[in-house]
Length: 469
Ligand code: NAI
Image (tube, rainbow, N blue to C red):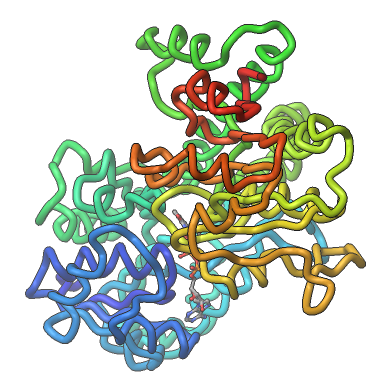
């Protein structure tokens, strides 16, 4: 097992890009090459307009790029030169075949592993960075043994990524923990040590946690399942609050004070989104089913059921309150990204809410500070398995350049992402109210309105998730 001087990262996405850019920035003596088959993505990483938005990322990439950080489509060349290879490819949910809708599609992991086996002459430490089902390393090992030359030595590690989009750089610079799972062999432990040495250049030693490979793989699924479960739990409580005149913010603040419960991830709203929670939970459900544990599968499935219901309930509420019809009514949609400080729309709750409102005949005016209109068009294209299309001439939504512009002439304003600019004191609520059609509604799915009484005084009718009217 060689010491690590040359690192390759396969997959230049939301995970591969930021993780390896930070690594290169922190370790100027290690050459880091991020490679991807997607030419447009690599082109963007090499330009002034990076393919993803993360606070602080631009400066890091600018400083390290060309020094010891490189972006290339030469996948084979990068693999061949590497001592250590991060596999950061996508692992989406399967859409067809066995396990469709639940199981992870491992075709990209397999393709990357086959490339490594074919191209890497000396062998390398291979690091699973992607979120994978438990025991994926076993399959990767089989591929490597079957395809690689006999003198090449490989060791597989699991090093799941815990960054959250929107705070990726912050999370990478000071991670709560870095898990490194290995096989319980001398070589496995040595490889584990090599990767730990790289992280120890900037990560607190107590945050670098070593464990067995299978535990490490499963820990990532477990952590996401537990986080998603908190969101669904508080949303279930929110629904009870709305029927009882309890206020979910008061209830959650009471719960947060208990140190055993903790203070994070207890904000009621329109549910979780993003590319990970749903997919990883589906994965855990599938894993439980394949292990013959249907009760365990049902338990985790309910977290997903609650999330889908939360989004539907929010949209239904809008229709109901606006006199049970929103046909041809203009509605301002404020925020489209799945959370603030990212332009990512994968599994954004906004997609489902907008689809429901469009299906009910509303005319939407969408504004998000970081999501492009082409991304919105892609997201609101025909739903999988549906024959409804909102594209081209039938399109019943427009993309607007500002919050104010989206609200002009609208009967309702709907908050779907917690962007700081929506909460800002600079928002001229009086002018917004004057520009809207009356009665003017605010449907706050993200706990943005801090002083509903002030807005009600202006004339707005205000609905907040978990509070009611
Ligand atoms: P992504 O879709 O943004 O990036 C994956 C990239 O891999 C794509 O650009 C794709 O072209 C490339 N790729 C696929 N197969 C390839 C191959 N054979 N050779 C070269 N490039 C290839 O995905 P993202 O969001 O970066 O996620 C990657 C993994 O990390 C997933 O398993 C995900 O679950 C996990 N993860 C994601 C987090 C997130 O916040 N997005 C956080 C933690 C883990």
